[in-house]
Image 1 (cartoon, rainbow, N blue to C red):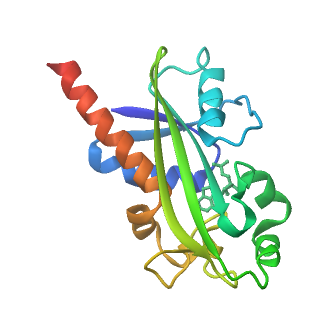
Image 2: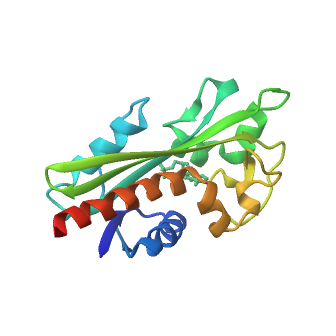
Length: 190
Ligand code: IMP
C-alpha cells in the first residue's frame, strides 16, 4: 500500500521509507504548502497543517512535525525548532548551553495521519537524551550532531539511519502509526 508523506525534507523521507517498509507500506513524498500556525503544541501545529490541505491531497497522507525540547532552556526551541535551526543553528544552541550543567533534552515527533477526509489520527514519539558539548558526526541532519540519546555515547549524527530509527522520536511515532494502520486494514478486510 502506498502512503503519501507531505514533506520537502529528503532526510526525513529516507528515514520514514525505511521505517514503513517492513510493514509493507511504500512511501511517496509529496509537497503542498500547508498552514503554519504559531503554537506551543506540536499537536495543534501538525493538525492544522494536515487539515489545511484536505482538499488538495487524497488520503492516506501523513504530516509530521518535530522539535527539540531542552530542559535547561524551559523547553526551547520546541515548536520553534525549524526557525532556530535556520537562524542560530547547532553552534548557537551550543553557545546558549555553554556552562549549563543540566544538558538533558527530548526530541519529539507528532504525526497527523489523514486516513479518510474525516478520519485524522495523531501519533507521538519521543527520545530522551542530552546536548553534547561539541558538534559531532555527519550522518544525520538538523540537530542530530548535538543530540546524544540516553544509553549512547555517540550523537545521532554519528549513528547511521538504521540505528537512529530503532531509538528515535520519529521511529517510535511511525511504528505506532504502522501498527495502527496494519490493524485498521485487517478490520477493513473482515
Ligand atoms: P520540522 O519542522 O519537523 O521539519 O523540524 C523542526 C527542526 O528540527 C528542523 O530544523 C529539523 O532540521 C529539526 N529536526 C527534525 N527532525 C529531526 C531529527 O530527527 N534530527 C535532528 N533534527 C531534526
